[in-house]
Length: 127
Image (tube, rainbow, N blue to C red):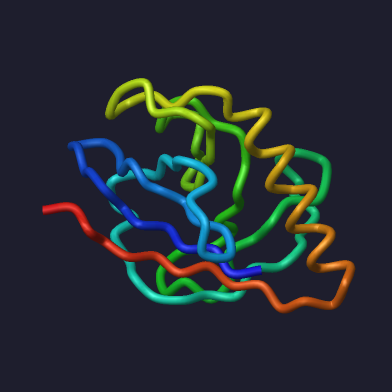
């Protein structure tokens, strides 16, 4: 699975993103504003102590650890991670995150179980 996160807008607190999966726009994302790193990183299955179940983990990001993909609505929910959702409500709020995350997890874990390598690429396209 190849995930591409295009960061579209930056505010003082957060980044609004478009999230493509295998070349197709699937979701929108939200991250803390300090996460302007770019590059491609391995994406693996990880048991999250914070959530109590497996989540996708973004690995090998310089200066950052334990970056998970999980349900969020606002930057306060991110805990330094990437949240995905179906809709952008404003530059501070994404909606329908639970449905988007469950759909993404199903596809991601199926790819991992099939032995497919997964990666995530971050690009800053905001001005």
